[in-house]
Structures are given as C-alpha cells and as structure tokens.
Image (cartoon, rainbow, N blue to C red; front, side, top):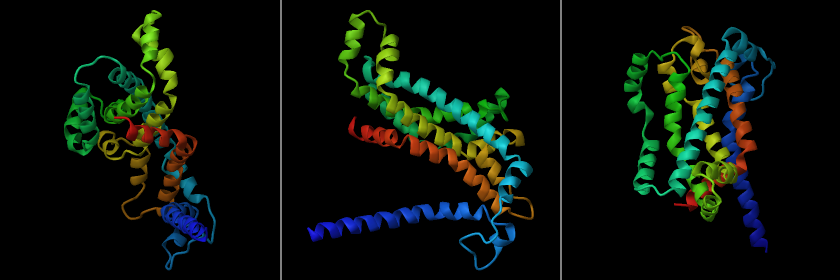
Amino acid sequence: MVQSKSRTVFGYIVLIAFLVLILLPFIWMLLTSFKPGLEISQYPPTFLPRHFTFGNYSDAFHRYGFAHYIENSVLVSVVSTFLVLVLASMAGFAVARLPIRSKGALMIALLVISMFPPIAIVTPLYMLLRTAGWLNSYQALIIPYTAFNLPFAVWILRNYFLQVPGALLEAATVDGATVFQSFWRIFLPLTKPGLFTAAVFTFVAAWTEFFMALVFNSADNMRTIPVGIALFSGQYNVPYGTIFAGSVVSIVPIVVLVIVFRKWIVSGLTNGAVKG
C-alpha cells in the first residue's frame, strides 16, 4: 500500500516537472511581453517584469498594424477549415461506406501525400499562382492550405464513419433515401466529434503556417500573423517586446480551441489508432 502511494506521488512529481518544463517558455514569453525594451535587454535578465507595461501590445496594433494580420489569418484559416471539412467529410464517407475499388491504395496515397513536405513544391506552386495572377491574394493561401490538410482530415473522418453501423445505410436505402441524404441526415450528425477534431487540426495548421504565406503573399496588406511577426524587426533593431506581444496574441485562439475541444481531439486520435 505504501509502495503504491509512493509510485503515485512520484508519478505526479514527474508530470508536474514535465508540465513546468513545457510551459516555461510560454510563461517567459508572456511575462517578457509586459516588459519595456530596456528591461528586456538588461543583464542579468529578470523573470518578472519590474516595470509593467502594455506598450508592446500597443505598438503591435498601432505601429505595425497587427489587427490586419489577424484579419487575414482568421479569413484564410476559417475558409480553409470549412473547405477541408466539406470535402473531407464526403470523401471519408465514400471511402468508408461506398463500394469503391482499391480503397487501400487510395488511403495509402492519401497518407503519402499528407507526409509530403510542402517546401518541395513551393517553387512550382509559386509559378502556377503567378501565371494565374493569384499572388498576394487570399486564394493563394486558401487553396494550398486546403489541399495539404485534406488527406489527414479524410483519414480522421473515415475512421469515424467506420464506427457508425453500416446497417443504418442499408435501412435508409430501403426507406428510399439517397446516398447523400443518408450521409447528411444520418452519418454526419453521428460523427460530430470527428468533425471537431479535423477542424481543430486544420485551423491550427493554417493559422501557424509560415513559409507559403511568406512566399505567396509578399504584400504587407496580405500578410498573415506568422509572417507579420517575423517582419517586425527593422534594419537596426529587433523589437523583442513587440514580437513577444504579437506571439502571445497569436496563440490565444489555439489555446482556446484546444481547451474547448480537447475531448474530441483525444477521441479522434484514439479512434485513428484503433480503426484501420
């Protein structure tokens, strides 16, 4: 009994230490965002701000136009997530429940595509977007983000559709329902956790993507949050406080999404590991 309690206490100590190790950089970033510039650059550094200020946040929004970067990121991420959910839900249902040939090869192809590094095709994508006249536009990011996040979402939703009894599709067909009606009215409502999981992963991937946003949208009015923060630095100075302030603001939506939908995220990953 004593040994069991000792193991439990030791386990909690390890978990707390691991949690502190993970959160320490974020806590440091949050506290530094409230420090004035001279205090950030002083040595030795201080953990807590001695002169608390909101000046870094004010500079981010008023001097660097951070609000416009937020608007661009919200639009691109939300539209990409919506398109991924629409396409992935239909594709996942078709692969899971419809008589399609070579399903295994199709899923392997999707897995290979999801593991493909985007940087390898940035150059041809850039040339294609330039030919279409889509550089410095929202579709220059929405379409690639949708394409790159679609395979993983199909995998997640396919596993959820496999958990819904196939007899429901047969019963709906007997009652005169079309395949789309069965998908929309029966299967889709039963797979809401999978939709939330795919939506969170897609949104976070689009929200944090940097390289394509930097290459495809070079105009200041089309920059997203990661690119905008990276370009806060001037020729002769690096406003660390402003950069940290922008970074803190940028991770707030991600933290909220993970906290709100944490159960569905864990469920989605678990189902993906069980179903083949």
